[in-house]
Image (cartoon, rainbow, N blue to C red; front, side):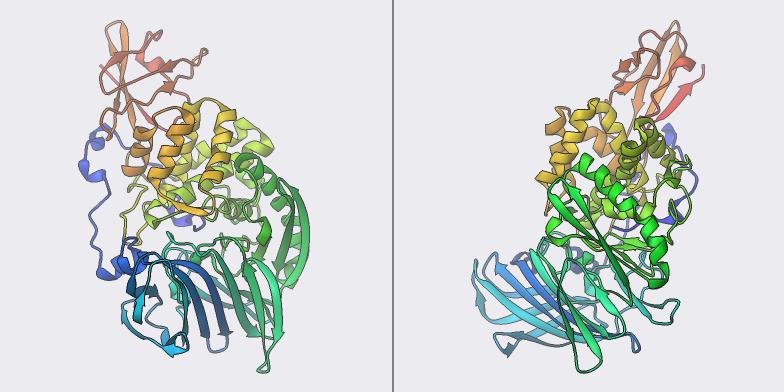
Amino acid sequence: MKVVYPFLIGTYILLLATSLNSCAQLLGDKETFSKADSLRGSLTSPYRTCYDINYYHLNVKVNPKEKFISGSNLFKFTATTNFKELQFDLFENLAIEKVVYHKKELKFRREFNAVFLTFNQEILKGKQDSFTVYYSGKPIVAKRAPWDGGFVFAKHDDGKDWIATACQGVGASIWWPTKDQQADEVDSMLISVSVPKEIMNVSNGRLVGKTELKDGYTRYDWKVVNPINNYNIAVNAANYAHFNDNYAGLNGNLTIDYYVLPENETKAKKQFTDVKRMLAAFEHWFGPYPFYKDGFKLVETPHLGMEHQSAVAYGNQYKRGYLGKDLSGTGWGLKWDFIIVHEAGHEWFGNNITSKDIADMWIHEGFTCYSENLFTEYHYGKNAGAEYVRGLRKNISNDQPIIGPYGVNKEGSGDMYYKGANMLHTIRQLVNDDKKWRSMLIGMNKKFGKITCTTADVVNYFNQQSGLNLTKVFNQYLKFRSIPVLEVRQNGSNVECRWLANVIDFDMPLQLADKNKTWIKPTKNWQVVPNIVEAKNVIVSEDFYIDLKIIEN
């Protein structure tokens, strides 16, 4: 769940009807994927499905001077079938020193970034077991985190080390051995990170131990008690200043901890007031913050930001908006800190609700981008929120489908952000009941919270809860490049309309922007628009993200 891509911001392209009938739009341009892609992205490989990961203990030492890491990871798992071989993942530039199972070393083989571990005897279905991987090496250093993955080794004003990790998309196996797929979240985890004694490490969950080591390093032990996706696991190390607060939320007292560079502490205490405003808005719209037991932290990082569960990375330079810019162009986006609102919004969508396959990453990014609208609405009114999300349309490219190809660790178009948000805003108009809409968002976090899901799961949920058949709407916006086009023409004394769309028999209702807010039900066939005399007078409510084309006689 990356932050919004600044390089996606460009001219908003409205594709006309002539482009809408191209079958090639479904699934986008043909791409070629390698075996390495399949090994990384597969959800159905028997070497992965044979075990359910229950617990990790990651114990890693970070040497910033050498940009070198070393350590181990304990895998505790439950066998879901009988097997003798399983797959875990670790980038091939990192050396596996040994794999230990019941005090004995096991054989393993590597294929690209996948590791296949062979047991000496069959592991039987239902058995709970464990093994430990010992590894070391120089991890990949991110060149432009968080858009690429790896470690960030930086310095700040006092010349001390400032270290972070960010690995969404590329995967956590870029720096630690893990079962690197979103579909199987570990149930709980202990994260032990050793860093030079002049700095401290902040990771996910709660600090449960601090140990001074004899070699000039200090180990920090952080415990996560909620299910967590492995790309969320983070190292954040600096000589942080720490201050805290509390929030009286829906599930009681929520602890809030802030870790910032010492030179920025005064600015942080002012800027971070947006955290409580975020919590108030999102608990209203989505239900309780999902991770009360692990608390909420905001941690300053040398990259822009990332939704690391219970330890949200912050690098927005203490500016309003997105590095001082309003992505919507409406002015509303300058009234709050984009990184606080967007990245913390992922605590509900991405961290609480997680897609099984990265191809369905719109579930993370579309809903979280839409949460910016709901934050704005909560604090500034419904019109303000609607203006904000409509303003984001100028950033949509309509270049590729939002859903990517499955099973190869490939996400879809960056339109998953702005187009995804406007799709949801459109669907809200179709539901046409704000109380029900809010209950659906809250219910979604209950139904899919702390588990993984698919696009089909989400669509079925919305159909059931709304009482509408929204499948065609979701399919048009998610599976095709183009948005639907409403064609309008003058036919004698009548005004007629029809849909042009990729989805067969697309029939999404629309509300007109007339004084009566009239609803019409266009189909693929021409039909009369009631109470309209001239085609040019057909104006659709701007809260529907469609293209309107008036056909001249």
